[in-house]
Length: 468
Image (tube, rainbow, N blue to C red; front, side, top):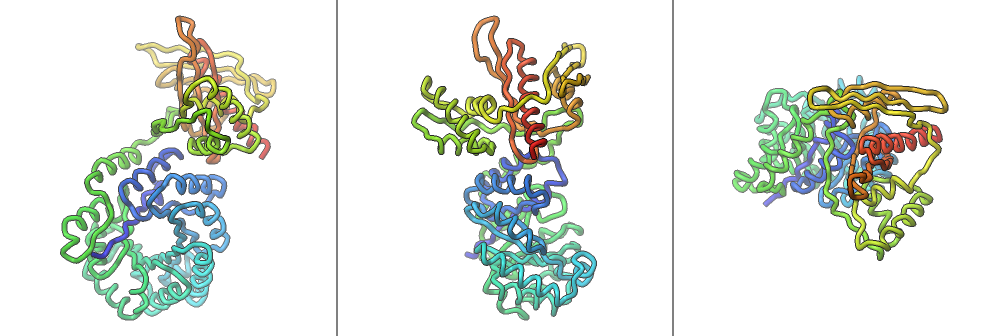
C-alpha cells in the first residue's frame, strides 16, 4: 500500500477568520491528534510575533511535520529556520510562481532568473533542513517545458517534495490526469521524490481532481480541515478510507475520531470575537501540569514556557524562588497557581496606569456599565463602557483608556480565603506582540480584583513597549 501524505492548510488561511494565539496552538494540537502528516503555517511577516507562534507550534506538535514557506527570499530562510529548527519534523517550502504571467507581474522575474532563484533557495534550505518542498504555484498554466525544467532544477538542488498547484481551479479530473502523466513522462526524476497536488475549488471539482492525481501517482495532497476554496480534508480521508485499497493507497488520518475533531476545529474557526467584548473566543486548556518541591529551576521554567511565558533569566529566578516557597507548604503546584506566581513575581514594573476609582452598575434588567478612572503619569483619564457583564464592561472601559485591544489569553478567578469577607484573586493574561503578560489582583470585591489584575498586566505591556 502506498501511503498518501495529508497536508493541512487551515493555518495558512487563518487570516480569513479570527483565531487568537492560544486557539492557533489548540488548532494544531487537534490536527496532530487527527493524524495529519504536515501542518502548514503562515509565512513570517512579523518576525517577533510569527517566530514566537511557530516556536510554540513546533513544541506543541508531536507527530506532524511543521512547514513554513520562505517564498523567494533568502532572508526569510534564516527567519523561518530560526523559528522552526526545534520542531520534531521541520519542513521548509520554496514557493515559486511558474506561469509566465505570475513570474513577470508577481515575482518580477524572467524564466532564467526564476530557475536560478529556485536552485539557490532550495540548496540553501536543504543545507539546513532535510525536508524541502518546491511549491510550483500556478503550475497548470505554466509553459510545460519551463515547468519541467523548474522541477528538474529543484530536484537536482535537493528538493524532496514537488507540489504542483492549480491556482486558478479550472482543471477537470481528466485534464489533471493528462497533465500529470505528461509531466511524469518528461521528468523521470519526479518518481524519485514525492509529488504533491494543490487545487483551488473554483469549479467545485478540487476533491475529484485530487483523487485523479492520487491515481496518477501523486503522494501528497494539500487539504484543509476548515476552508472554502480548497480540497476538503474530510472528503480525502473518507475516499481513501473507503476506496483507497482499490487503487493501492492509504493515509494516516484517524477516521474514527475525525468527525469529533473536525467539529472542534470548525467551531473554533467559525466562532469570532464579538466586536463589543474584550474577551476573545479562546479555548480553555485543562491544567495537566503539576509541579512539586522536588522540581528544579529547569522544570519550572519548562512548565512556565508550556503555559506560554517567555521569561528572562532574572524573572525566571524570581519565579522559581516564589515557587519554592509555595511548594514547600503543599504537595503540588498546578497551572493556575503557577500563573499566579508568574503574575506576582515576574516583571514587576513602575506603574504607568494607577487606578483612581471605578463604578460598576449591573443587574438582570439593565446592561452592565463601567466608569473607570485611571491616572497615567499623573494625568487623570477615564473610560465609560457598556458590557455583557460587570467585568466585560470594566475591561472595555480600560481598553478605551489605553486606546488598544490586547488579546485576552486567559482570565481566572478564585477564592483565596473563606467566609463572608473572603478575598478573591484574579489573574489576567494579555498577549502583545505574541508575548504573554500576566497581572494579579486581590480584593474582597472580585470585580475590583479583576480590574487590578488587568491594569497590572497592562502596565507590564506599556513598560516593555517603552523599553523596546
